[in-house]
Length: 269
Image 1 (tube, rainbow, N blue to C red):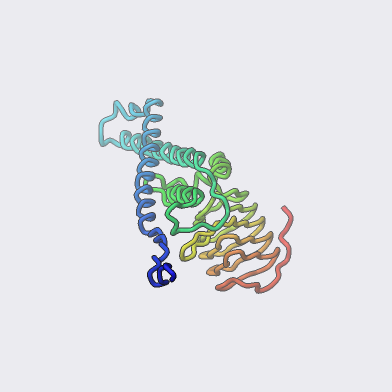
Image 2: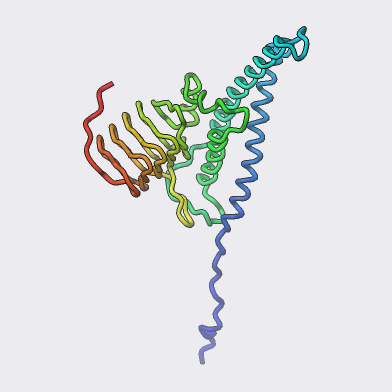
């Protein structure tokens, strides 16, 4: 006579409960607070130290408070302090980015109880990117300084995006470390360029490439893994889906963006 337990008596296999992404997001947000405060305070400390080393605090001395001469000198000192703060802000961001590994392309789970290191580095670089593009007062000169030499070279080298172009109004670049932008590229106001795609339970990281002489209109969405080749144009208010390849000298538009017509080749530069 069999002594095996009935099938209904067998214990059910244990299923590991997926990690709640809300918990991880709260941890990231708290770290974001600490990182922002550190970058802001370190930049302010560096600026104040430089003002002291240059002995600028004594500059308005000897003038009666409230006079025109004193007011002009105090305004000039404040402007110098703000410039030093913005320079220090860029340098602090660059140093922090230097110590953070670049996430590798791939697809990573958002519900795993042991997150992949690349997902952790992606979160950290994302926080640095937020600190750059959402800089607090008085870091209002960061977008301008980040687009002029020598800071432009420094940002291209360590922070990203790797670009031969500079922008009058910076686009919203979510993953600058994985985005390459060529020369003579124009990107309109409010456009978002990404190198990742978030799905329900996963995050896919794929580099995005925009080649030379490309024009991207305002309020365009460019998802991860997109490759826009030389001389192409994307009309404003379009959405370029993940993994899309736009051939050379083509005009694309729409949601999702599709080929509209061919264009003449751009002039050689």
